[in-house]
Image (cartoon, rainbow, N blue to C red; front, side, top):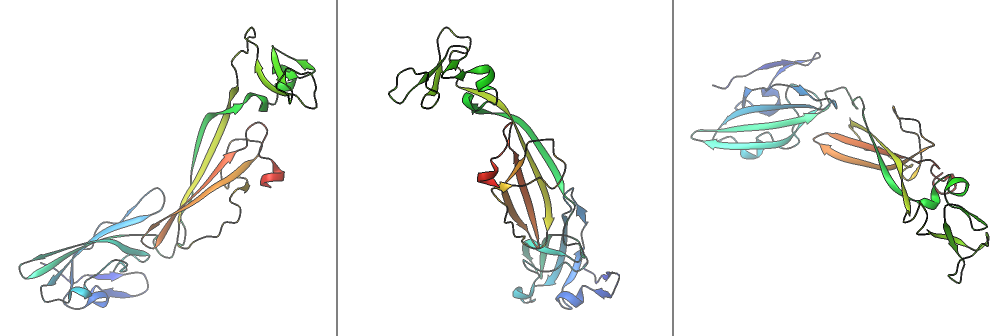
Length: 241
């Protein structure tokens, strides 16, 4: 059978009747669980007589009767002979917290970059039009081979070169993420600009904040900040500064 349960939040002792009315009783207050990101969840079950006003049953957004900061994000209502059973799934940051500790992730891989962008292209890979290396061919505006450093651009490596067919190279690519829960939207004015990650990250020339995403969980917002390292040459401060 249902029962009236007393709760004490450290300030006031009250019962579930204070929240939803005398005919609604808690069958099971539920187990509080907190994940690695600081989000707390709990599933609570109520019972009410069949003549209880349906619109007064605990609904989406209702506060939890025991754990401050948690609100209902999903509800199931089952009507059986003589009574309702209401199952509410709650989520949020336990009051008085307004944000959780950050969790950091790192991804290290490689990406294609044009061979001419390699820092050692002129000194050790392709050279210059006037001093080509490894069979590098440079073409002028007319599409013909040229040795003019002012107008010619790298085109390809000759078929007899050990570099024949090479158009790109693999460069290290670092990505790092910070994930946490907050209770309010934050304003970010640095997206697309050079910014150091706000947490542990490997050494890099510089970093670019490339994304900030929000996902709502009841009263909490899951925020992900994403940074990308600038590679060997770094992000151009004239463009991204």
